[in-house]
Length: 370
Image 1 (tube, helix red, strand yellow):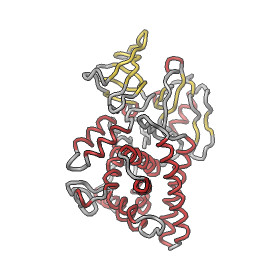
Image 2: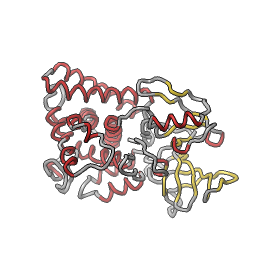
Image 3: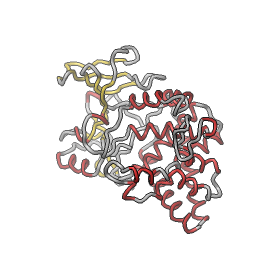
Image 4: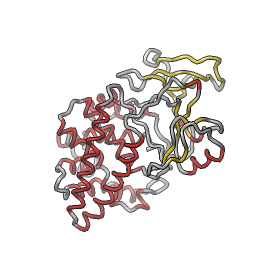
């Protein structure tokens, strides 16, 4: 099985997994041969990619660390919680707010249990739902990355729980940002960016009023844009002034943001994004945390199509533990020509070969890959 962008789908391709909407309703069943009309519909609904089953890749099994059902439920839960916290804090309805916080606490427990059930590199694959949910899916991804880092660093259970809540709620303050700015289909003006930057403080003020949440959760929202050298916001905190949990969330937040394709910019390659994090170690990001991220996350998931720097194309077939940016590639094409047979290239061994492009960077189609 392989992961294919809807922009590159051709009629007759067979779905390897069903396509469902955010409410769990099946749009297309597994095993369906896709038609041109259906491809256009998938693109219209901003579904970025699908799983395709074919003989050549039947031995490759893409894996996400959480099931489609749990991801769908998590996104809906996050959206409902954000809405409740924004609306009910204004009306001082503490019972409703505390109930929402309890729901999020149970969700974090569920996500942590899912992560603990995987012993290899965590494969975190973006959503494939017909739903405009960048903020909410981003919150889920940041929580998964943060929890994976926390598990790798062997944080204590109570600290891991607080980290999970802080990461999944880190952007709750964005619900106080006007929608025309938050969802603007283009680059923000400087004045608009200054409004967006207030979300850290807004999130802190919202979460500090939730009595059954640790104040540390509120500070995670407050501090996730702070940087070690004091160049972050909103308070310009420096290294030891920043919560360790907030430092973890900062790494997870930046990686998910820059690898997500937006209307106004292309997504960065996962390996380039990792290099960005390493370039900032010691000044922006904590080296220990970035190292833990690299050890725990498969930044090129199994099943994704990549192009190598020598013109060959292939599919990620296996991971190399500890070398998330250098997986094993099953090559099927060279310089635009299909090869008569497939073979594997281990990027951990062939150091002169690198990934030049992957599925998220092949085209200029507008897709939400958050």
